[in-house]
Amino acid sequence: MTLPRSLRAFVAAALVVAPLPALAQTPDPAQDDAAEVEEPPEPGAGTPRAYAPDWRKGAFLLSVGGGYVVPLGSIASGVTAADLVSGGPGVSAGLGFGLSRHVSFELEGNYGLLSGGETCTTCSGSTLGVGMRLVYHLAQGIAFDPWASYGVGFRTSLVEAPETGAAPAFGIGRSQGIDFARITLGGTFYPHPVFGFGPFLEGTVGSYRLRPDPGTSPSVYGFFQVGLRVTFDPLRGGKVRAPSTVAAAF
Image (tube, rainbow, N blue to C red):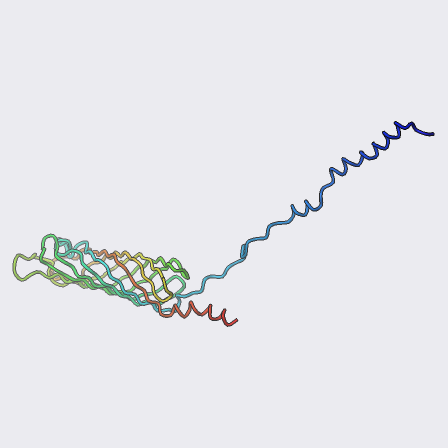
């Protein structure tokens, strides 16, 4: 049977149009592949990194510093330091040895010159402290090293009055005692592997056990110092250059 021409045209059009919805719904494999591809991670991301080289353990540290020293507290019962002496220049020096990556042990000493006080304006004095301390370094392997220390030591202080004129009845002479707390906060910047410098703040608390006036009782004294410290680490330079030397060999 022969179909009419119009019907044949309709059937042909239907056969052509029928697959189009299916083609429209077929996903593009290239698009799926692009969606599944993840960006590569950054170099070193997720990779455990080793600690920085330990440049402190076993190393000797030499430090010198200067600043301003202020006496606080009392020389003896009823005799305040401010009545006899006031602040003056001070110097310090220390020799340390690295115990670990963050801790070092140090032998150190400081000396200060004191000028006249509130009551005895013509008085003068000096103070010398020697002791030991443990220093905790917050960072290691970078250019800036924040640190804090706690120490104890021995102290001898001298207050002198002029031979003429009215002199205080007590407190003149040499006193000796124990620094039972010497706390220091500071930071060292290393522009070069073997040389560094930075500020520090130090507070000392102690008691004079031997006094020029035996009739007085011991009291608590203190010193506050602010200054600049220079550190020399002669062995650190070799440790810093060692990795680059090994790398250059390969």
